[in-house]
Image (cartoon, rainbow, N blue to C red; front, side):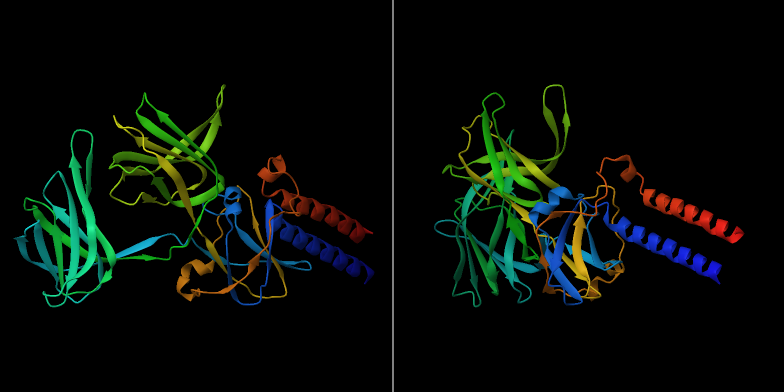
Length: 413
């Protein structure tokens, strides 16, 4: 009986040791943690703070939520929404009923085939070079007209250095039977067709990024302006506005890039760039450029001036996506925390990915506390032990071997 009791005791010790190492193995490879407070419901959510993005993998593979209760550790499944701008466009068929000349210009009238709400008209015009002011009106009886756009500019330029066209009418939601467009053109516009639609922007939640430095250089040799923008930390940028204070008309090619990584040379630190946007900065359109870029803290904007004077840049605005994490908690008795900062971690695979329709659109907000260094981090990330993910299990195997040796010895006795 005494021998059986000793063996049972040894088995319990080995099992407890293995469980303890297993729980610690889940936590000890993450550099940072943020405690979660206010966990009381099955579904709860919180926004990921800007400061977090510079310390995680670009695809957020190393985010984990763990709950701890005494010696028990559980992993919490979650789903992440980037809340980036999503656009949907519903096209409406129309009839073109007339094109007439007036005293000061020309008119065209478009009639939607259905009584639908619209807020956008894309005009296809055959003229290659023009600069016109248009007026858009709506009517339900083709007699009483209501102004939707006034003194709205459309233009097209085509020469050896520039090929640019802006012929889109953007306006507030409207619902009329007739739409009349006036062009202040002496010659009849070569109207080819139009696309009438309702453009909707969904799920956009973005916040302003904090800029720490802004460096502008006008280079007369390259006839270009370069703007280097540094952010407080790496963030998922989704929109940049280049606000110009010049009161002249301008059409300048613009290129927006972001730093993806860096490398050292004998002289200085150099950067690799990824292209975010390439187009035109003009006095006709809003100076806003949308895209989905990687996490970055450095942006380079290049404006080609050709033989023109450089533009007077008022400021740069950078917006970042606001990521929202929704988690499914099982028990409020656990102490939960968000762990991150592990460049070796693979993305978790949760059943939630296959049942997005079961995740509530809104959930009770949990409170994400300030960042702390993870006290369970056993060793530095550059240690050779961390490079082998099975080193803890090797220690367990050694412990089992030692305990097994003593068990066999007791059996012989």
